[in-house]
Image 1: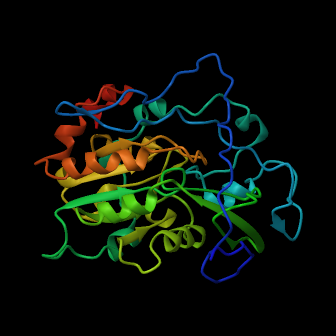
Image 2: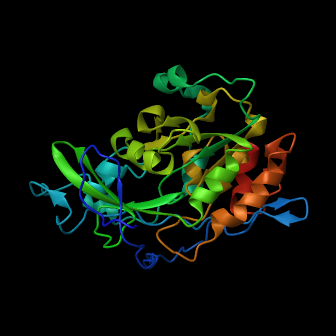
Length: 317
């Protein structure tokens, strides 16, 4: 029997009646409108069955406070409520002028990234990573959460699959969550071949509830890494694969924002950002590809056959 969605606090997220209709993709108006990562990779004669869209404009502060319980937000430059809860990988607040700037360029960000040797690894992440055992799969799969496996919002989704409350700076927010089509089938298939990690730049208080939805019995993911396990570089949170202490030749990343792994582009499969389209089949199409990729001696040698725009950055990876 399907249950209605309801507010909860410190409880397991609650399923609701049915999924909402797919929202429209936001349109970005810019003269330099370049599609990012729209070509596909190849594995021998096969194409990688996924593609990433160009990044969207940074989201502005919500114009209403219907989704927040408590006081109204302060005026002036500030974090938007969604930025506070989800983080969006940016580490600093945005002024009104900054929010009106052109679309963030992942290419410019990666080109300007400091040398890897100048960055220190997050101590908390290194300390908590479980050691590899004999029963652990040889290959490693690192997964992002938001717009890769799920879509969540502080705006009301009337038929959200899950809802839960989270807190930030003494305010309570209600989060609405829908799952990407075939996400459960994808995770079940991948756990047979990969040691899986969640690595997100979102705050732990929010993200761990999302992971609990995907893995309620804690059997799918070997470990979970959050914002505190990221490094802050040029005002953005980035993810460092070396904290996992796994063989990079057998490690693959699935993320809708490749610039969050600027030092590991050759391990990346950039997936199309998902914001609610119920006709989406990206994860379903990825299953047979990933089952073939896992047998590669060096996953990076396969993925560098890509023909997307990131190929021109690989020589600097």
